[in-house]
Length: 337
Ligand SMILES: NC(=O)C1=CN([C@@H]2O[C@H](COP(=O)(O)OP(=O)(O)OC[C@H]3O[C@@H](n4cnc5c(N)ncnc54)[C@H](O)[C@@H]3O)[C@@H](O)[C@H]2O)C=CC1
Ligand SMILES: O=C(CO)COP(=O)(O)O
Image 1 (cartoon, protein in one colour):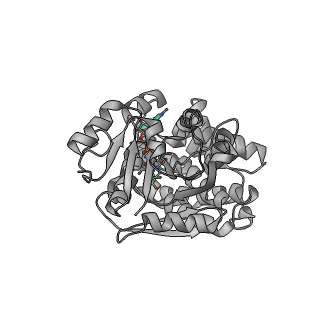
Image 2: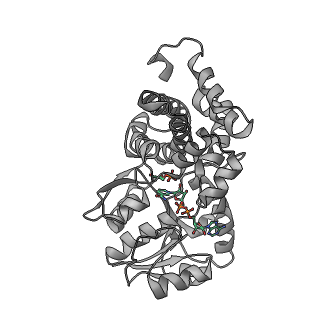
Image 3: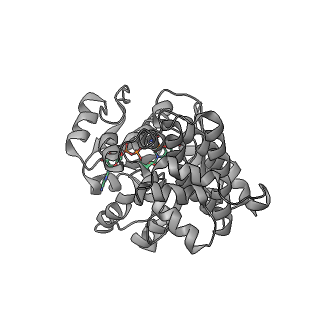
């Protein structure tokens, strides 16, 4: 059994720490909030993020980052994209060993247009990175903690590092595949949140199942178009981390992105929605990044562009949908190339 550290005690960090602890690993969960560490250690609960769940007794939490990192050479980074650099900067003040970093965040940084593994590489020095592995796929924390069957993919340029992560996490209810397509996996995981916001808006407008199927399918077309241009393997986008995650995020009531979109579709303003969520809605910042990427790579991304206008240019959702429907005529499949 291994020592493993998880950074970030939100819903996903906590759910993954539970999987690791249930697999028998000595798991230490870091939170930046002392009172949350006390709650986890004394009551074995995480009321804010997973209110119905009893955490295993062998799962220990700390708010001391240096102690958390000392504990292990495998560190799972499970904080939202916008906190990644801050956490890395803190780690760099004391890190003096090589670590296998597993990241599970789904975002792209606006303006720098970096994927998470690129942000990690930039903010951590090369001599502390043993390897970077991305763990991504259709996996809502709320279902993982119920032991509902879940499949996910570990991606790394170094397949043996991905296999190590596969071995750490895999169990009866949590099945882990491997791939070396880091670019495709990271882009699929981040960009599906954009489409899930749009699907939520469509449901908020009561546009029904035809519209949602259209968003999922045409959303996948534009994700794939950009992803392939950026170097992802086209097949990755129809796999677990592409189509799989797109389906779950566009259709599940657990999805924060879908729920936020739903409120927007019902007429709420973005600031109100984000205040009410109290959890990270990665798709909002990623929409900005995806819009910038579509311009940089000259790849048409009509759904992303429409959502960008809704979120950042105050366009009425209904008008954005109307405009998507009356775009110039296209051929379906040629459009993918
Ligand atoms: N919730 C889920 O089911 C899944 C989430 N993800 C991804 O995992 C990442 C984390 O998401 P969740 O756990 O759901 O978010 P969350 O909103 O439930 O929790 C975020 C956690 O990060 C902490 N945090 C925020 N800013 C911080 C900072 N500056 N320094 C340290 N800690 C900070 C918060 O206190 C909180 O504990 C996101 O990128 C999300 O897309 C991926 C798969 C499933
Ligand atoms: O990535 C996820 C499921 O695979 C979680 O999606 P949400 O952040 O929309 O809840």
